[in-house]
Image: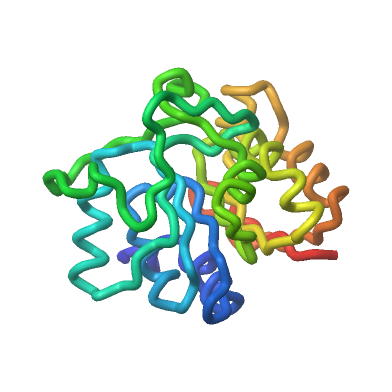
Length: 210
């Protein structure tokens, strides 16, 4: 707040574009605070977040503010492959782990470091499994954004959702030896126009159908 807000331009862009009843895939929900705002703005949420200990925070936000429940929660990673472990469930609303204790410090789960410990799903497969076609996708995943977008290629080609992508050039190269420019050009070649929204601790971009 002292620096003018957190990801203010990104949130302003989302607020300006989201329509009532649109399906919003939020990849990397962290503490679900931004997800709560987007739901209050009228979107229907499909949420992907691997860290089970943050879900009680989400449930508290939802109950306190009387927010409409998410369509689906997937406790795992979005990825360029689908590897579902035993007992994986696509939850309508919040998963069972949301009934736990609220915690102040949660930490990140990162696909490049912990993929083997959690279920993974391609966004393309999540669309098929749920039947919910995204009008919007937001992805803020600490360097794994190219892997995640590859797993959404058919969704992007066939349905052209708006994409808010938070790109981490240093993490992308460190983790995958890939360049952010290659990711950005890949999305453009699929048929998107890029708008740079801000550079606040990462590159915030909006992709709209060209």
